[in-house]
Length: 158
Image (tube, rainbow, N blue to C red; front, top):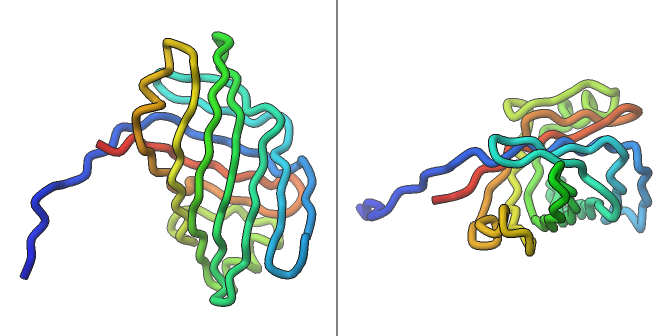
């Protein structure tokens, strides 16, 4: 049996809060596009800011019933930096939990598998370390319908 020769450590970077009130478009039965609503935030130990337009999620519905996330987010930090975040991801949940979410109930990481892989781009000196890391995000909360949102905890992978 092969044993790993490395291990993965993480460092908490931020929580991304994306309200879903920006509207959506159903391209066809396999692709939905969601505009992130106003009042989105990025908050962490070394970063605080607003999620601004243009930001959105392209959600591809796979034949298996899982979803593939393709997202782009713009953050304007409270000290004026612009940070571009892009990520893919996988979402999978039971039909029961999908119905709960559709009825407006908030789900957590125990209700669904929702993992993302953010990367960052910025020219601001205070945040350039983000340009050199791979991050991983995990769902903290997900609510569908009116007042819906998604919250991710984002970690640098070491």
